[in-house]
Length: 281
Image (cartoon, rainbow, N blue to C red; front, top):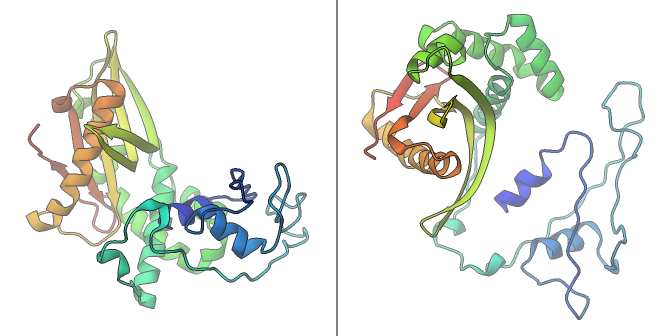
């Protein structure tokens, strides 16, 4: 359900969902995402190849500009998935219900907005008005949070260690790069790979690759954390080490960079701290 939720909530203007053909009896497996979508959005519709079984809104209204006719909205009732969805047994932990307080929801939303601003930064620290424009453009509905997010981002960028992430000279020094080498920046890298028979997926917030005449020789993986963390606390860092180690293995597998030449950085946006993770290779 988490994967389906992410897939359906990232579209800005248009969301198109293509379903595979149903089974021989004309029905989808009861525990599948396809069955959930059909029962929720188009109950009773016959699923024929090439047929549009559900459509909402106007195809012309995709710019989000003011003055245009608002999209049509329709309330839907979400049917629960069968516990054995995707052919896997539900674990005890998955039966627990997480109920977030309004305060926690607000904190998560602020973290999302902070991340989205940092995703737009390449190699220069943005001015305050640029950050404001980014927030207005990407998150117009969360206008009441813009000032708080702006303050968090500016405070972090004013810290020398944090701002060095976006400094090409400082980055080149960390990666032991010389004038002939090339730094390649990648942001929001989605990974889905198989490492030693174990499937792994994730998103690297910021990845810098150092390339010379022989190919890719070193890299820096940076993960932004919006929680108010104390990076001096080993217990706090411990819960992120596994995640970062998987990222390092994935970069090693994809680009062939030696494990010991891939550095791992945790950067907290709440206090502007940076911690280099030392994980044995």
